[in-house]
Image (spheres, rainbow, N blue to C red):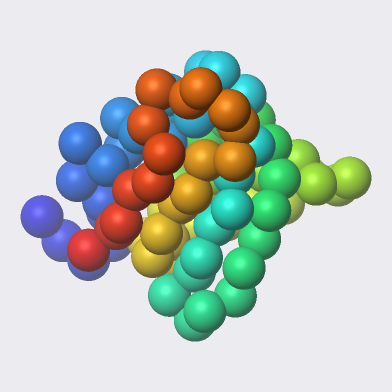
Length: 84
C-alpha cells in the first residue's frame, strides 16, 4: 500500500458516506476541519482520488489528506473513521 492511496476498508467507509449522503465533519492531516454533505468520489487524470463535499459550494478533498471522518447524520451506519 503506497502513501498515494488509502486502504480498501477505509475507502468503503467513504463510499458508504457518499451513497447515503451523510453530513460529515472531516479533520485533515493539516488539522483543517471541513463540514458538509458527502456527494461523490472523483478521480483526477493523475489517478488521485477526491471526496466531493457540498457545503454551499463543492469542495474536493484528496482522500490521502483525511485524518478523521466523523458522521454528523443521526442513525448512520458508522460514527467515526480514523485514517492511518
